[in-house]
Amino acid sequence: MAKIPFNWPHMTGKELYYIAEAHFNGSLAGDGPFTKKCHAWLKKRAASSHALLTHSCTAALEMAALLLDIKPGDEIIMPSYTFVSTANAFVLRGGVPVFVDVREDTLNLDETLIESAITSRTRAIVPVHYAGIACEMDSIMEIAAKHDLRVVEDAAQGVTASYKGRALGGIGHLGAYSFHETKNVISGEGGALLVNDPGLALRAEIIREKGTDRSRFFRGEVDKYTWQDVGSSFLPGELIAAFLWAQLEDAEAILAQRLESWQFYHTLLEPLEEKGLLRRPVVPDDCQHNGHLYYVLLPESANRESVLAELKRQEVNAVFHYIPLHSSPAGRRYGRAHGALEVTDRQSNRLVRLPLWIGLSQAQQEKVADVLQKCLTDVR
Ligand SMILES: *Cc1c(COP(=O)(O)O)cnc(C)c1O
Image (cartoon, rainbow, N blue to C red):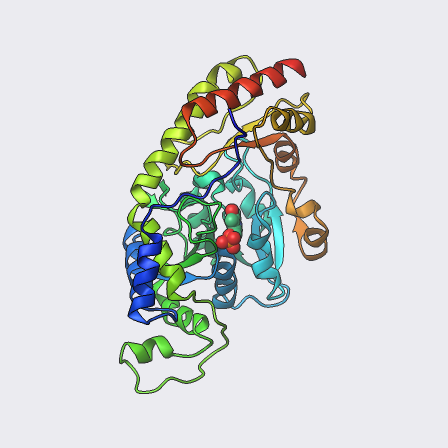
């Protein structure tokens, strides 16, 4: 069996056809027909009042920080166990990330620790739905309402996943999606901002269009467009939107296939968990996840580096993430940890992500499980 890659970007087969159509239409700048189709799809799927394509999830989070008027010294509560963009987007505005520990089961922001991290400078909470498994959003929204805070969901990994029947990204005041090639639905680089608070929608359009009311001008609501506010160019061109449209059309099939592979690992690895060789992901009852990634937590006695090296020798490409932000050089400089972050430190050192992509065969998954079992039995 040949080497098993960690990721393989999935193409639906229609991407180049739609790109050719955009090319033929001669409409290549942003907000053309394909962008509009993507907006309508996202808005409907997430039951959001507005959806706006961006260059990336990072760009969507940067827009969120601008929209919330984050000022130097403002504090934003978030997990340390996340990708750098969650924090960077707010740090760019002078915001201070306040890192709160994660839950043992989901590795998501521990909602029971949020209130004790709130100060007079706190402005927002940024829950990250790790692996497309939802944070405890009811509690988070309740805490936010009580303390008059805004909630920005980092739903980069959460496209087509839901919490109590509500789409991730569509629950907080704002939500950010990623269509990076390593995610479920892709456009190479790409993202979207979901504006769920209708009061923020008009300004979101302005910030995305270089600070102008060009979107209103195109809708015929104003007779000229001018500089209205701060902003930048956050919108992708039509070629990206055309590619993305092919993926969104197939999003339900992509979801079904990823869930199938995820479930196959889950079944294969159950006996290993029973033997105490690893811990499998936990999906709370309220969460319908999207099979975005499959991870295992190794026993504390196992040496992750040697497990990863052995997997590689057996031609299985597995990886780990994240280096917790509170222990990274920039995280220490720009943010602060709330409490000890023990779960973050312990679990992030034990986590291994297994290959998961559309087209991965069951035979390949069996091999991954076999190799994993062998090296975990050896290290004991
Ligand atoms: C992938 C990811 C991002 C960044 O997404 P881009 O589209 O690459 O900017 C942000 N947050 C999380 C949790 C992610 O997984």
